[in-house]
Image (cartoon, rainbow, N blue to C red; front, side, top):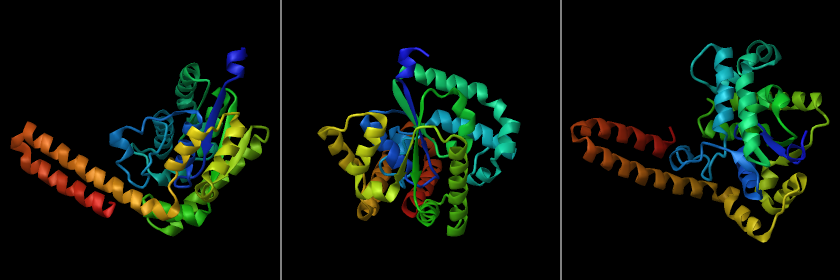
Length: 281
């Protein structure tokens, strides 16, 4: 391995959906990790106001994982309940169908950045497929109490109820533990979401030290502005809802002007979107 690749780090964020992986990934980006994203455009970032500051999620890895999950489930569209179908047997059976795509993605990304990484919660179930191609993996494992994660899942309509959310969160945690037990020598750090929100600078310093990155005053200020305290989350969501309504209205006006004959069609769509934003449906 040449010196350039030896100095490289690939940072992979593992954790259940709604466990704090987005907040952790946002901080990693501020610290200087080139997070492979794709879901942070103005349109996509504010489509789901349950993450007011953005998802910082890899569209490339998301597509790869969804391709695998859809093969396993025999369906075209990914749903969270597919997660339960992903196990060693299913990965052995279908994993080879995406391995070439994984290798291509990792090699291309590794050429562009010295320290880079990604976040897609489904990687917590498929990490064994990615590991052979990753150069110098550094694992960031985000943890949150199952009940808290389940409450967030239910609130964001990801699951039908609290019980389903707890089951899903525990399933992800079990998969991560199994992976770590098989690879005990991999560099890793554990991040507790509640502690991160309460003490963002203290926890960011631990991440910076783990990855040998600098945490200066400018980055500290960015992190403080980025992290939303628990008592401010609802207020931030309302801000995003308002912005979505404004952007939606402007888009509606533009379309009506461009295609006046479809005005009733656009009115119907606008009403449906308005209801979705107000009632989080």
